[in-house]
Length: 164
Image (cartoon, one colour):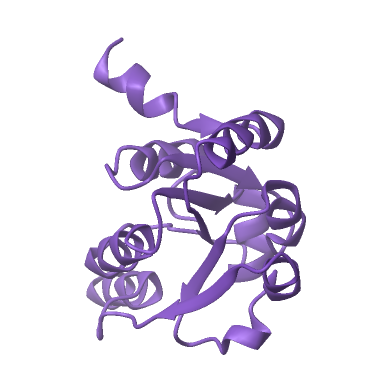
């Protein structure tokens, strides 16, 4: 298998992901889930995602589709298309699986995959994180991770606009 084939093999449909999660669960892996747009990947993303992986043995990234990003961030986003974002995310060694979701929130994806740990940034309170009810009902954990100060896709986009 080529390196690119190895990377793209981490990008799965919801149903394929469910089968893989069932295998991981049978192997007693601790499955961590996080989600986001990850439009322009930066140091803050790497820090956040690597810390998310530290919460378990497998990390699933729920990735917003282009349509979902546009609804959330506006018509000029994403800057990077969904297939390119998925390949970038899958190339990170600490991400085990990338799964698209087209809804505004990953609630249905979380319900389908049933991870053990749900992670979001510390700008959220655990009780307000989408999927909190699903994870806590099964005895799982919902955790937050602090962001690296000064790094955000929005600030990068604004900086580029200002320099034009």
